[in-house]
Image (cartoon, rainbow, N blue to C red):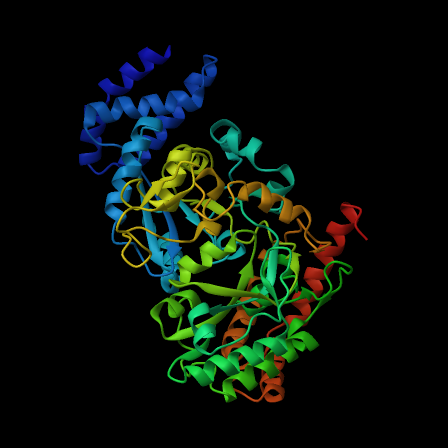
Length: 538
């Protein structure tokens, strides 16, 4: 049957399908079944299956007046933007033409995303594509939320452009037990660790002299922890009514070159560039130094008394005007991003070094829900998010002429009368987006920031010997849950300096070992050793 006859058959069957739905059938399941049937027939006739299913969807929408919908979820620092309905309609106007689909962005506040997305994925609420930043990639895989992207040639047939866009070794880094469950966002896989960010207005108000600092290769001030202590003391004295340090719970990721092998810190590489030895970071000198520093900062009044319970994003707190500094990771062209996140100009101090961990590529891939009703439609939207510039701009920046305007050099800036405070769509999580480099570059950033980032990745000073290693901890989920429970009970009080370090570290480590840390580390070491042997890494 040719494509035209197949589409005619689909249209003629639409009214009957509507009747079936009214009798309790599932419309999306029917759409999925139709997509698969159209695709198989197209393949059998030597036609383009991807194009055939798109045309079939358009034909059905022309008959029924409704487009099939794909829901895409990720977080923003402050919840769903005010203009989300307008943006979703603009996106759908485009994807109706390109994919025969409506696309809805479901954006959730960062403080709630992890719990909310797991609940939605487990309860059957429609979420077709989602970022694993928040709940964690391995958690999503272990809980059965993620679809095998290569099942039934899904990626090869409907995501072929992803195969050519993303390096094979980066895709391989997202495999768990040989199965590809996610696609990594195209971003800075290397990070400049331990970046301390301070509101420029507070430094100026304190009269702090920056002339003594040299700059690093990225153009940021090169500092030491002693310098940070001095800076914090100065701004605390000048602004005693504000909290100095806006905390977050990813200290080791943001502030060190410790490699969270297998996607968690229950067994790490403390010297990842030179050694494949799994060790307990919470017994290390590095973590002891942080515990001492946090305790000192807490005693000095630099840390909020609500730090252990406040789940607000660190940059959102600074944007509120109540906090003055935070720690993060920097990269090429980071200045505009962090200024936007914090709602003010930030001065960047580089205290660490560039690092690429074993899980740098696979930290938070984009996944298709195992329970999605139409995997073909979901894969085609996923591919478009990486490859379609118009879609990428809508998702990353909003609408031209409303949120932003395009300069003569193709960079963008705020539309007239719009800024970070009143913009109706400004998620500012480019690093999480599938492919930020398919979208416009913000004014002030180099137009070739994509290439600069690729070079930054390639020239990273500290690259883990375990880069690309993933560990399927399915056989140790009981131990992992026990370890997480122990961690959550004792970690925050140490990390935020609410307990004397020696006492807090003992409580934390005793709880971790009682929860099975040694057995978990031994299993991780065995898997890493096997992987290293198979890949000729010593």
